[in-house]
Length: 287
Image (cartoon, rainbow, N blue to C red; front, side, top):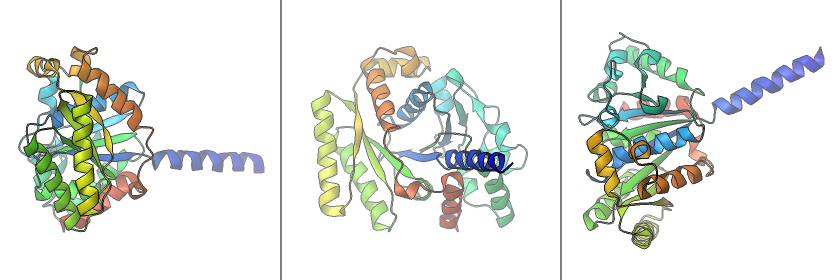
């Protein structure tokens, strides 16, 4: 009997450890037009192909387009949860290759202006996701809106998407600098998109990382480079993720390598708490 009890305690402990390992990631950019949402969607698909259970929250207020990129339409969104019309399970939509996503739009602005009663209900619903997914990814708006800042601060880690263009580099650095100046201990990682070749991608990442280290005393590791690939725009026009439409393209191959390497990187120390920790931070900042 003691052996059975010990075995049960071990299984429960193992389950708790697994549930605590949900990674909360924010994907953002300093400016629009750098391919942030396209990266988010295809990155999520690449993780799913590795056997990870992934949920995408479309948190791009006013410009939500994850469903458009997949050529799908959303029956429900975050709005229906906030209006207490649906549960969290009802608003999770099924996208291409079975990827799970939640449509957002203006619902995320409403999210940050809830009453205490509404906050408690929302938190209770979202906490049900704890341990149900390996990765929950928030695709935020470009630039430094107050909503984006809150998601960056609440997430375990933030992926900043930039391109080699000088304006994109400047805006990416400005975003990181602003967040750091607010005293937010965000864990940033960098993706260089639309690089002409691997050398340009590496030089761009090194340039931003060097400036961040020198002036912000902050590390900015690079996750990798995605080449400028005409197949990406073709896939957008077809409303099919490029990972599916053109799996042998340079962009798709590079993204799969990035996703594979990413899950080998341990979650940051600030990543403890999973969904519950995220919700606590998000609403603490919203008050």
